Every structure is written in structure tokens, then in C-alpha cells.
Image (spheres, rainbow, N blue to C red):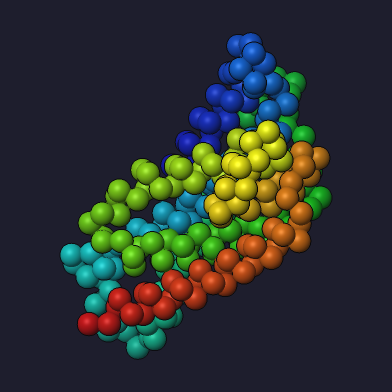
Length: 237
């Protein structure tokens, strides 16, 4: 429900309201719906997967130590951590399924986004890969931050990653600011939004598909490995 409300309100303002209020003078035209659509799908996916895993881990290692109950089960500790990643992944995929229809059908009259769903296998792979990556990142952050301070991570860290994650503009549009164009490459959200853009709006320009595949794939493997390792170490009495 939260993802639906956030996505719907953002798309409604940028794609419906502003274009009809002289949005061109603000840099928001009717064609902006095509620019915004991939970014909103990517944000919904990353945000939900990360938040779900981070919340679960904060409960595991919080004052009540929910992890102690989980350790009573005849399961290896890494497998317990893996269930947190799976849960975050499923929530991320569900969020994408909620966001995609919203960005496709909520727009100004006569100005639908020009989306191409013929590359749906790549879109599916991007959504699943992004969900695993950010669920694993939630595990890493959740095991590194004091559970009592997790609430400080969400209002500051994630919004910055989103604002500088090429959500509201393609990476190529940062050409006039070359220093920023390369700085944001340290942000994993950039690769998810660009991969989603390649999947459903390739006409906008994007990072090379090979770069996107390698970066997301390697990042997914490394982040998952680090998350499982940190979770196992922290779970030990």
C-alpha cells in the first residue's frame, strides 16, 4: 500500500498536474512521463526490498533478540539470513508489479509514456536482480548499524541515493556536469534505474547493457556474500 501511494502521488504530480500547469517552463513536459516511468519502477523495487530486509534484521538483533528464537530451529545461520533476503526479494518484485501499471496508466490526457515491454525478460531479470541486491544491502546495513539507530538510516541515506540515482533523469542527461556524472556511478540505484530504462524505454539512452549486467550481477554476488557473513557473525552468542 505504501509503495502504491508514493508511486501514485509522484506520478500524478509529475505526469498529470505539472504538464497541465505550464510544466514546460519548469522543465516538465508531457514526454516526461516516459523519463519518469523507469525510475519509479526502479525506486519502488529497491526501496521495498531494502526496507523489508533492514527492518527484519533490526528486529533480529534488537532488544528482544528475535534471532535467538530463530537459532533454536535446526537451520544453519546463513540459511536464516537467506530467508530475510528472500522475503525482501519477494517484496521488491511485488512492489515493481504495483508500480508498473501505475506509471503506465496514470498520465496527462493524451500523453501516455512511450513504454516498450518487448524486452520483458530483461525487465524481469532487472527487477529480481535489484530486489536481491537491495535486500542483501539491507542485511549489510542492518548488521552494521545499531538496531536503535536504524530509523536514522532511512530518512537520510536512502533519499540521497534516490535523488542522485538517475530516477528523475537519464544518466546521459548529466553530461553538462561530468564530475557528477561519474560520482553517481558509485550509487547502486543508478544501475537499477538505467537497467529498467533499457528494458522499457531504451529510446531515452542509457548505460551500455553489458555494463549494467556485469555491475548488477557482481554487486549482487558480493553484497549477498557480505550480508550472509555479517549476519552469521553477529548471530553468534
